[in-house]
Length: 130
Image (cartoon, rainbow, N blue to C red; front, side, top):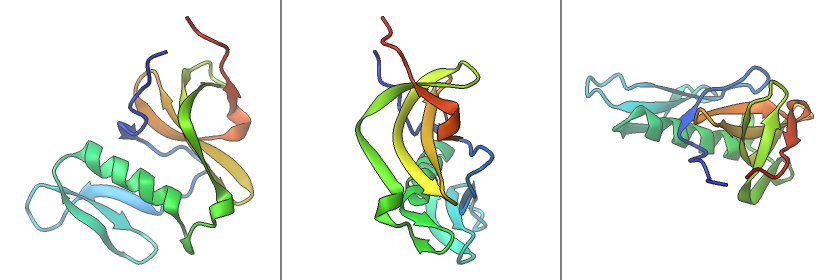
């Protein structure tokens, strides 16, 4: 199975509160930044493209929740992305899990290369694919 670039494009799904938001910076440079909604300030700026900023936001979402550093017991990193299927029959891979408000969410990258946080209730291990 070919591995997808798990962080190519991030869109948040319902259920995961979004602390980090990607947007154009306000300095007129035309670059992107990652806005931290918990502290109301830029976490990163000067990022050349949106994909780079989305990856940075996704990685920060794994490290922090709304209150500060995410409890290490609330993160499960996989050694390799694992094939998974969503309840809507979409195939893809999961590379990390986070727990928020007592529920586990997987960072799911579908065949469309869009990355989403998906409830663990909606993910299943995929059967072996040719």
